[in-house]
Length: 133
Image 1 (cartoon, one colour):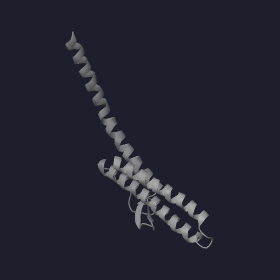
Image 2 (cartoon, helix red, strand yellow):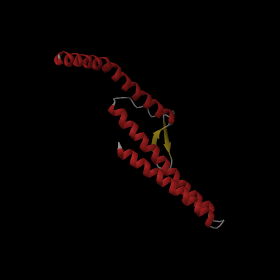
Image 3 (cartoon, rainbow, N blue to C red):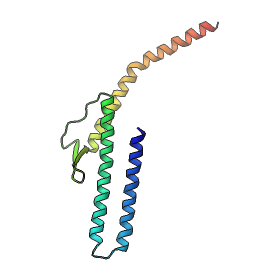
Image 4 (cartoon, rainbow, N blue to C red):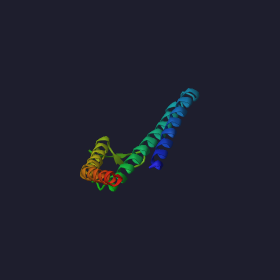
């Protein structure tokens, strides 16, 4: 779990560095090279953003497998192909669907075991109060 957050933080840091480098280069380079430099840095920033989306997709798929939740099928509504890294990742609609399914699965688990745990705690407190007398 911490690896995900660390990787995400590093990618965000690299995106910020690329964007800052782009702004510095545009101010410094000649007018002929501005288009090349801007497109090169923009491509790198877009690739990093796509890597960030791919990382989030992998995390959601891992969570879906842990909770035994079905991942949406490979269609244009839930998945998109990024041309810069040539990999597919979940769209916003696909992410919402997976997160909703995971949340529903968690809710079902707690709603099933919640009353049983409450009864066990009540019985345990009754036993302790009777034992103290």
